[in-house]
Image (cartoon, rainbow, N blue to C red; front, side):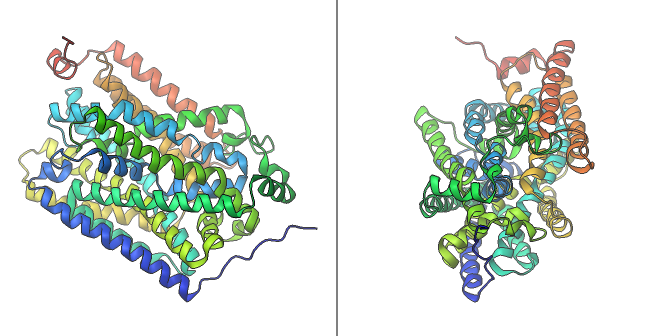
Length: 519
């Protein structure tokens, strides 16, 4: 006897109204915080980094929001729904292995280095750390490439939940969302963005925890859940899926080479994400108590929701809907989370999920787009043409924010990636492999050189382009995604250290400034 599944719900007037109200309130509050942030800056530098007085609670909440993206809040459920228990290896089970070390390694040093060097962006901080304008520009351009790839996934997550809510085209919803994101970034600058992201971090933390707890309670317990999934397909409960191809993204679930690569991916990408590290640029000087509270906020906002999400929600959605969602193009498995929310609590729960998902996706998108705009204005134009006025830079920044919001929006509408966690994963692997060394390791290793950093950026960017073709685009795939991660991380490691040892280190003056002798 074949398993019986609940039908995929059709949108109702109540669903649409509830979702619009929830999303509208979120966007209005975000815009309001952005406008308030306008009071916190007066110059172009303050627009980019504020007055470096943001406390641990806002910083921790904003960091959580920049890290927990559409991948984590929507894509992780989708990949577990699609592949079963084995999908958890790449669905976020290692999240805390990355985000907590990010605070340990990068928080204090990012703030300290940027203040000493009078830097307002991550590329500027690293460029001045190595006395190299050329490196600053190379980093800025590389970040543009990676962040653009990663931003596409955020909008697909929003489009997926809008389809589940209304059954309509995501066009108008996404246009409204990116307009509001533009408003609070353009008006509020770094401070407005930070406060809006903190609000969004709180929203998805509460919603994610609620949905995860309700899903476990309503599934009938793990025994009931396991029994129904085994009846559907025993492979859904396998921790390792040797039946899946060893090439392509499924290597992450089908072989030990791929499975062992997943904690490395999460460890390096959390610290390598520039939109994470940038959250520390505007924070105040932390006491031990402040630092403790920041870590606690990140653990609560990030750890609990994502652990529930990647460990149960995808499985519960598969138990309830079976493989039905895989037939709905182009959303497929990424519909699992919003459809689960509806199954658990009807229109009200779906409305809450809508607010949570847009909080996760918009916050990460906003953090990345703000960096992309700063990369052009501060790290390219202002760097090489310093006489350009602050007013001109602000106006250009507003235009660039709009451009960098529109381009991924258009790509998402025209050619949405099949599984956003996999598409975003390749960008995350490249970002992590490159910038874990170029930023985090550069904060601690005096002997690192600009040529070691430059060669690492060039290699990692080129290798990621190759990996996108060899793993995701080529049919059949040439490499497994886990193998590609090892090629990226080990290659960046070797190049960074070997080239640094072979080339001249920064000036002693810079080293003495950044690494003062202990008394």
